[in-house]
Image (tube, rainbow, N blue to C red; front, side):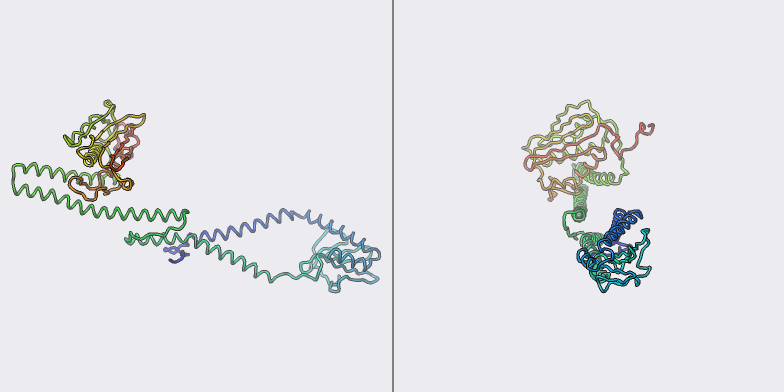
Length: 457
């Protein structure tokens, strides 16, 4: 794939280029600040320079004493070898030098000297080498320190330095491009998804934030792809499921049998149930279908839910010690939850299994309702997707285990709208346990309609 672009699609500067600019600016600022602070630490002011000049003048005076009076060339030659310096002496009686290339004192002009307060002493530089001119005992001395021939500025090193700095920035540039390449892959992935290609996957490189983002993107596209396929399958299944009761109604009307009204009524109820689940799910998704919360006696509500399954094998048994307990809930929506869970529990239990158990228990801040069956159970690999819309463990959709994959998804939406929760535990071949948590306080529900008490408050 191509490397990250330096421009965004809208023509703006890419985040990669911005970060690279920040990197360069930071390097420059840190370098400048370091130089300023080092200058301040080691060359802190004029007083330090004055002290250095005094020390240097005193040092030169000691050297002059070493040369004797009158100054001797042999002593100068010894000092030159010992201290790695060159010396020239000029006076009324003549002069000498330890190095023939050392310029005459008269050849030095004012631009070679810097200001100083030391009497009879001047300081300066020639081609980056320090020198001192001192007048002592009627003689003028030139001391050139750091020895050797006049050093020229190493201007040939400047291109090398620039090349090294340029190479460093080039390596940093390539390194950042490599780090930010996953962003380019993500941009390409978003473009592919926007064009409807949900099978496009983004390469995952490393386990840093960008790697996690790419992995999350792939997971998102997979879930969207699965949901889209599920919805497409839903349309086919709903069409089939609606067509079946409609066909039976037509047949009953044409045959005009004595039990025709019963058949028609049963099929109409089946169609109404299917449509109600679809509408209820869409209503809760929209955020405009608020629940109407009110105190609801829990035990009668559980008994009403059980009453929807008379004489249905393997049967349903209620265990509850909360007869007098009332919860704040939307009665119809809560009944829908109990009906769906009990229907699943009965449907996936064989006639030889123990009865489905429905129980409740109260806590300080919530009420838990448990629906337990001892049926087929759910494979562990299916548990993570069990609450997704349109998802079904049984893909066959036979009449005995039919459904639309909306029951558990609808239950979760209703419980979340109540400010509660739903937890499902299951072992294949052992059964399933579903726990509903209803909060005692109804102030947690974001979708409920305001009551008169709320308005008064």
